[in-house]
Length: 181
Image (cartoon, rainbow, N blue to C red; front, top):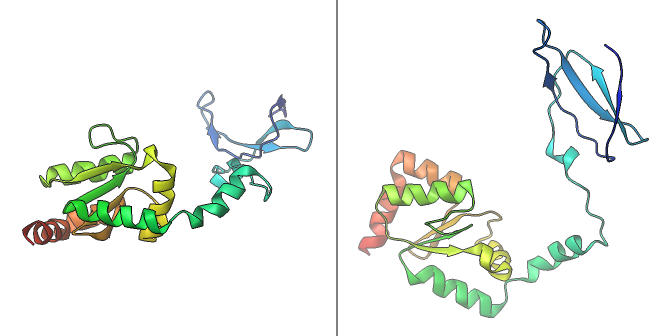
């Protein structure tokens, strides 16, 4: 197979591409050269794309890096009080991306569907509306991702934990105890 170059930005993705034009599928690997051209090589071995190859590296002096460093100070005493009031305002509170009627994340949608399946009344809080709330909640719960489910004023878990507990029947028991208390 001939080697050809294609102009592209200097990114270093690697990918497996199968060709069904010929009877025998062939795998290709894309490799970035220092000259910012992309060479296609026939390696007969699939290579997967890794997230680290596609994401740009943050320099310590970039604004995004400074923001991430200052995010740990996001939980002020006032925000902690607000979060405690929110978490205890209802028996079941879901901090999620989007709303129960319009989830903006598949994981949030999964938890919403589980709670609806169990006919659980719950309060939904859209964390995308307030970045300070979003960052502070990560520190408050000591859980870095969303959605975050609180039952009876206590952090229960994210999507994976909620799904596992739903499948085992544990979630229904925990919710029933919280609602009946």
